[in-house]
Length: 447
Image (cartoon, rainbow, N blue to C red; front, side, top):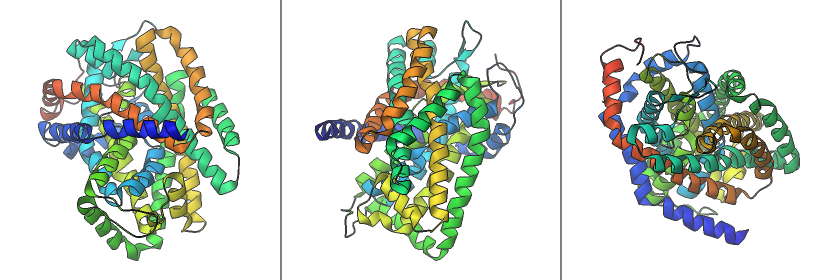
């Protein structure tokens, strides 16, 4: 197992070098300015996203598509992923995660726009879309579409399944001495009950679960920060200074330079909000919407809530606790940071992870399933769901390092084809945005 971890770490380090970081963050910045800072429309986007009425062709409401996407993105990346970034990259990684979210709003908007524009209607009447259809129909690059779908169907088992199951089983074992396999078994059964019903069943659960879990977690973090409010100014300054100079301290934490802060901040930012990954557009394509731009605006709010709000809360709590200097990482660091605030901290953390993990497993099951369906047709759907349920159990008892590193590798492989499509089709994105948003025709029906 140690040899496997070393090999995976070397591959991850190679993939997550400067080229991919520049490509990812560069795409965020490029699309931000190409779209005249689309982030300024976030208020309008939030207003549209809260509507549950049917607006056009599709399988689920815009709100259902958003909550399903949020279910997939708001997961352990927002809790354990943040602590992993801080442990490896220092407090400065929190700022780079946050900036990845701010600029990533433009990328999430662009992904969804293209996925709705190029979506197709399947023989059974359901909608199918995502970067694989964008690559095939928008760029005539079938081979790259196949690669993306292959990477997605595999990536789902890492980022959306095993990592999630592993994090909660580890935390429950450390907090309540419950064996990891017991947590895994309960999680497996609950997952099976929901995903058998497909996207409508998943969306129905997510519409109820996601608002509750996100609001409860953010309020809990605000209470925790309020209990040590005097330390917040120093915490913010530490994060800002470390982001550009690195930070070294005594103890188990060996110190991280600016390069590591940027690398782990952006990598974990992608893991958390998935902007540029190409996953969320898969469910955006199933939304009932009048035109591509309306759903694109709705989808862009997912990155705002996920990283700009939720990840920021977690980062402040962890850095403010001071526990990151003791050499802890992953779930152990998160647990210790929240445990410093007796009673409230552990409750917020446990409830947050339980709901975040379960919802993410549900959302990503749909992403992986649609990618597999693109490759092999409808006949693969049921076998894929059974395999998905099995891997929830497997992930619950695996090594954390192997799972996280595997997820980093597959994330990188999945992101590249999607980023290529966004850059090459940026002209189409601008054209559609001008037609519906800049010319104030958001209520018009699309073609």
